[in-house]
Image (cartoon, rainbow, N blue to C red; front, side):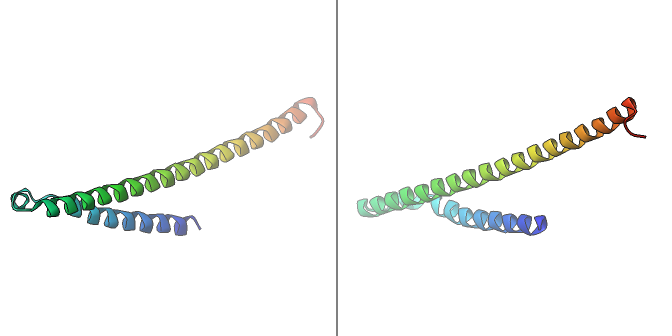
Length: 105
């Protein structure tokens, strides 16, 4: 079950990386042809560039939220395991105490 979850998260990460690489390729600016552009072309490029930046920022925010959620779940799991270990240790100590008091053979 954990393997399936890890496979899904890996696929999601791969999908995210491929999408973000597409946006980064679109952000590259060819400075040699920028001298020949008209004002209308520059304005259209500016709006496209702004839209791409907004999409990238949104994707980064989604990744940060997902990463935070995953780290929170990992922290919860570790805390639960620590509590379970403390519980087992508590019962082991009770068994030793009973033996020392002679309540159990």
